[in-house]
Length: 237
Image (cartoon, rainbow, N blue to C red):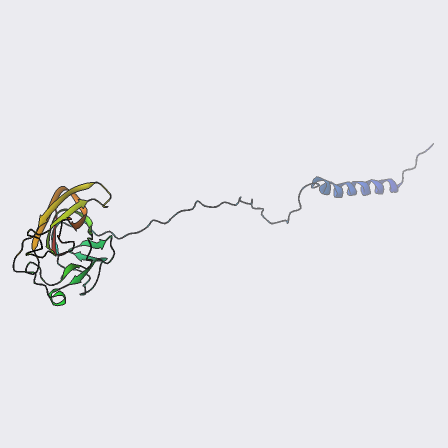
């Protein structure tokens, strides 16, 4: 028996082969996410928060200076007006002094014209005690100093029924705060003259250095509670 070959069989094979080739790429990509050809996929970076940082605080610190400087309430900066009360600051030769009191505006700037007092050791404006009760005056310097000299007057009255010896004034020296360790103390008393009130000079020095002092009168029967100061001379080695 003779088998007859027909062209139909070849056409079927070609059809099947072509179908398989078309299906294979689709099967190979099965299960993969669809991507847009020509687009690069960039990995997503997990959200992060940079650590909080505080910018450095810039403060202007007066340069350390050496020498002798006098605060007389007349020549310092800024200019002080008669009647002006503490707290205030004065700058002389690069050194800044802050004047304050635990009793608020207990002291003010006065002069002979405003008080009519004769105080020959004072000149021009001076620091006057407004408070009839005992008050403490604080002076803080912008750097450590080694010595200080202050002219003062205590509001003592002389004569019968008053004191025979002027009231003593006390200076306490500290570093940074009046609650810190005490560097040292000094006391002094003025002398009666023909001036309105007794005047004197109080001084303190220390090689350790200090940048804060307090001034107050010592308690005494019928003694002064108020005092005035002028001409604060400091030395920085």
